[in-house]
Structures are given as C-alpha cells and as structure tokens.
Picture 1 (tube, rainbow over the protein chains, first blue to last red):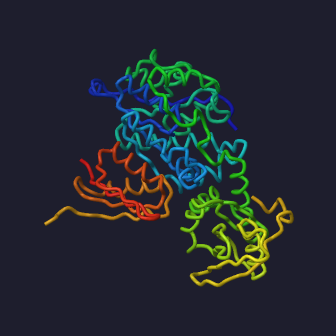
Picture 2: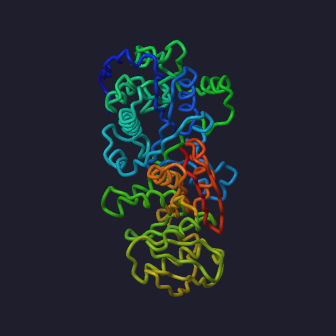
Picture 3: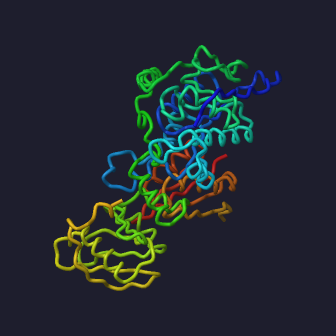
Amino acid sequence: MVCGKVEVTRSVVRKPDRMNEQPKAVALISGGLDSMLAARTMLDQGVHVEGINFFTGFCVEGHTHAIRKRDKARPKRNNALWVAEQLGIKLHIVDVIEQYKDVVLNPKHGYGANLNPCLDCKGFMVHKAEEWRAQHGFDFIVTGEVIGQRPMSQRRDTMPVVAQESGAGDRLLRPLCAQLLPETLPEREGWVDRTRLHNFSGRSRKPQIQLAGQFGIDDYAQPAGGCCFLTDQAYAEKLHDLWAARGERDYELDDIMLLKVGRHLRPRPHFKIIMGREEGENRFLEGYRKQFMSMVPISHPGPLVLIDGELSDDDIELAARLAARYSQGRDAERVTFELTRQGRSRELDVTPYPANDIPREWIL
Amino acid sequence: MDSVSHHSLDARNLLCPMPVIRTQEAVADLVPGEILTVRCTDPGALSDVPAWCRINGHEIVTTERNDDEINITIKVGA
C-alpha cells in the first residue's frame, strides 16, 4: 500500500514563444458532477478544454439502464457525452478494455472493499490521459478529484502517487482542491489563476452542489461514485465465481458484460445458467445464442437461458428444471423448452424445480 | 450521379459506449461529406451516437428504428 513521501516531477518551464497561445487541457470526464465542475472551472479561465473518457468494460453507464425495462425512467444516455455537450467541449471516448485487464488482475496497490483497484485505476487513467496529452500537443491534464472524497484514490497521501506513477507529474491539475495542494505547472506558468481554483475536501457534496448552482448547472448524474461495477459486491462475487470455475483469473469483454445482466445460477462447478429477468435482458442475451447453449420455454412464457459450460444430459435437465422455476410455468406439472446447441434444436420436457429446494449457494 | 461514398458499420449486439467508440474509429478514416450508416441494437445508441455527432461536428442524416434494429446515418463533418 501507499506509504512514504512521493515527490511529483516538475516539468520543464514552457518556452515563452507560446505565452500568448490559449492553454489547452484534456479533462477526464466520468459523467459525474465533479469532473464536470473541474472542466467548467477551466473553461471559465479561458482554457481550451477537450474531454477524455475511458471505457474499461466495468463502467455502469447508460447501457445497463438501456437494457432493463425497470430502469426505463432513467435517461438512456451516456453521461460523459451528455456532460461534454452541456459544457460545449469535444469528448474522446477511448477503448481501454484490453489494457485495463492488468489493472484489475494485478493491482500494485491492492483492492478496495470489493474488486475495485481504485488507486491503480486512477493512475492508469491519468497515465492514458498523459499519453493522449503528449500526442495531441495539449498542455496539462484536469481531473475532478477532491482530497478525502474517496478512501483509496483521493487521499492527500495518494494524490501525489497518482501524479508520479502516471507520469503526468505537475501537469496534473485538480481544480476542485488545487488550493490545498502544491502549485502545479499550469499555475506556475500563469495558464490558470490559482486564486480562482478551489479548496474542496472531504466527502461532503455541499461545495460541489453550491458551485454547480453558481455555474447554473442543475442537472447532473449521480452526485459521487457508483460508476464502476468493480465496487459492487454482488458483481465482484460473480467475477470471483467465474475465475474459480475457469481455474484462472482472466476475462474477455463478453464475460464481464454478461455478469451485468440476468440472474446467474451455478448448480454445479462445471456449468452456470444465465436467465433474463425481463424482456430487455432476454433481448440482450439473444445476441449470445450463437456462442452458448441456450433454452427458451415454449409451453409457457419465461426467460431466455444461456448455459455456460460442458453439460451431460443430466446437467441439461437440471438446468431446464431450474429455468422452469423462473418461468410462468413454475406451478405447472411440466414445462417444455426448446434447447439449442450449435444451431441444432430439440424439445425438452421437465418438471419445475421446487422453489424451496434451490440451495442458496447456487444463486450468484 | 451521386459521388458521395457511403459506408456501413455493424455495431449490433454492442452495448454503449461501444457503438460510439466504433463510430468514432470509423469516422476517423472518412473525409468530410462521406456518409456512414451505423447499425445498432442497443437503444442507448439512439441518444449516444447523435450526442457524439453533435459535439464533434457531424450531421445526423436519418435515424430509423425497425423492430430491434436501429440505423443511424451520419454525414461526416469538417
């Protein structure tokens, strides 16, 4: 874990021939309020700002809301795009799914309460932003971090770690708490006015909500956090289960997307069933039927079921009996399924599994 | 005769923001005026792809929704 003093690299002073150019900042935009306010603070100081957003595969974002009908009241939008549009800035969404695996699987600074490698994650994202900054000739990086806001990645002692390990050094500016931190390059060079930056700290949201009010911002996504499935206990347990069943800690995008959707049951170590909980999830799972064995009840309405693993005939019957329990034929004597494997279908007639007999540990 | 190049991007069965990322990558290889039709299945794309186009200066020509498929046609901006 983090300990000791970390010195942040001081960047070489800028050449005076660019003194009259508009400074350019790339802002990490999560879609939440803090990064929105940080970017807006820079815009207010005349900085040219473009946003950057990293897609790790674990982002909660709009897609899960789009799948599930029960969430239909929530806006089906990508909040990072929405924020960029409100601010009038460009947004670059970067696919980091493959590179992010190492952050999840081998976090140098360990995990938080679940599988959330928050400090490594922040360092990784600032590092990717620093790469982008250097490639595109921008001057500095902006984040919405606030001292004390997060137990791992946003502490006074971990903030210099992020700056140092990311390679951004003192080109990393946190406008919301900059007055509580050592001066950075943009401040020293006069690209931004330190007196017009902020001194927010702690978990209170009041200063942010007040600043939002000053900017006339009255619509924003979740006030803080909740943007990553790795912080979610149930999701983390499903990911642990996947690794245990496969005997290795690895994943593909489809694996981690499917963990976000449906009801997951593992009745035997060598197979798992994934059942849609409603129409939107069934439609999403439909897209995976070529990759997995699947079944659909044809005698009664019920879930589309994907089956992950190599199954014997007894296993298939068990899977169908469990799926029947979650269909509208749960109280019927028999439920008929259409079972499809490798493009070939057959019918299967089973007795629904008794509800009280389903062991709790089968339900992930 | 229409000399504008038309391109198609299959983003079906991808959840947002992947359709946006794929659109971003496809547009990067096109020149202003060219047309790209993005085929999607995630309803989130109905808001996200147009939002991405608006902030990056591209024009939405048409948006069509048929059953479970969404086709968004974009004219690449300067």
